[in-house]
Image 1 (cartoon, rainbow, N blue to C red):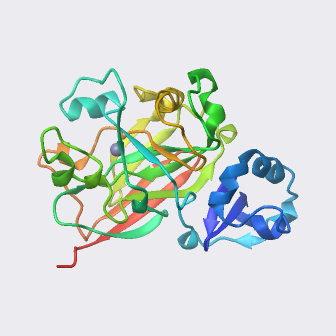
Image 2: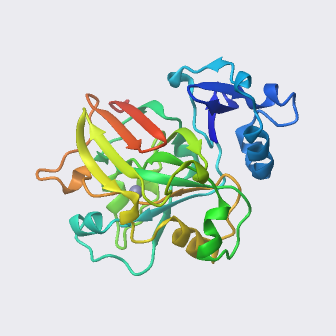
Length: 282
Ligand code: ZN
């Protein structure tokens, strides 16, 4: 199943057309996507039985919002791809390095982001969305806790991210608009192998990041098991799973986002995000 949010209402996709969840279910299911995550199995069972003619809406991609507009918790993981750990000057970590993107930064797939003062960088990431309350789940059952996968862009202002000793990441990654997600949420069963997806970041059409998610040091099930060993995960929570090599601050010379740039973040089988930027208002 592919779930999107169109003009604020939950829709499911059949090819390039969509069905409005609340309308087509005659009100049995809510239009608020956050409410759907509270009974995700029911949503999936309902969508599996939809006839082709239920998909009556044509979709303007520009009208799609974040598939999870108001997550209660947003986890993010640093240095989860060996080449990115190496370019950042670290040995691969033994434990996941976890920080948060405060939830107000979450936006949809096509946005214009105001650049705050400092050095704003890109990080394309696979995002796992939690589908049920999950505490102390084992790694071999962790995929059952995942509602689906989406694309995320972990925009990062490097000056505030790395300020202080020890540095604290979360504020520099939480400016308004710093968490683009989408364009849709795709359930794990839709992938031949949800642990091995091509992931690509493009700056002005040029590939700057490219890897496969199987390169992760801590794959999705291990991240979920380790996070849930401490924190109860809630329906609709997001887990940004780390970025491949090729971020701007490790380029020579370093390269940061400007108002002239277009950033595209793409994952096989899900789709792409597209961000433009404006200079900060003084
Ligand atoms: Zn990141």
